[in-house]
Image 1 (cartoon, rainbow, N blue to C red):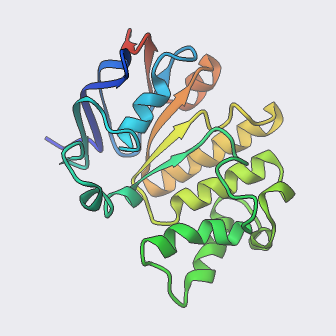
Image 2: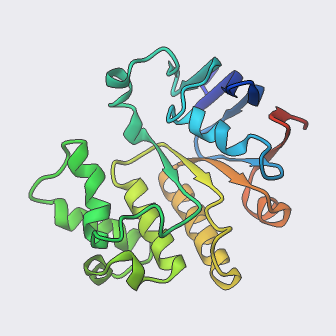
Length: 224
């Protein structure tokens, strides 16, 4: 029996006396999109942060590619982090306004010690992969549209060849006219690279179009 790309069991996240995520369990295969659906404040984003170990859960297990993450130290997690990357809701907020796009895309490669003589060419390939002309690397985020900036954020997330993207409302801040283009890009990347997507969204129409399966959350719990 194959091991799921992501396997979450009895996840609990508390903020003081408030339980934001209440014994949530789900799994995700490579090449699959699983949507977490529900109203604002239902625990979707807290679940995503716990999956990424950006907020350590209070209880439960998170297994990624068979490895249990919750008991690992920060040093032990470091080599796994490039393989599970976030894409955030606000395309401008996720990129430093001071940095050119090429530097933002290159940063994960440099942090992970993967930058070499072929680095600039790799950045150009990543920009092309997400539908941006490599010349856009010379621009800063405020010189791009929201859709272009989100594409740059996706390129940055792909820099270290992840297996899982955690997409936290990746199109909700975009103009409706460009949402379909970004969703189609994500679908094409999934087909080409075999990526798994944990897709946080509150839009039922988008979920029906984009996700393979969906989980409904309310008050920190899975209801369906």
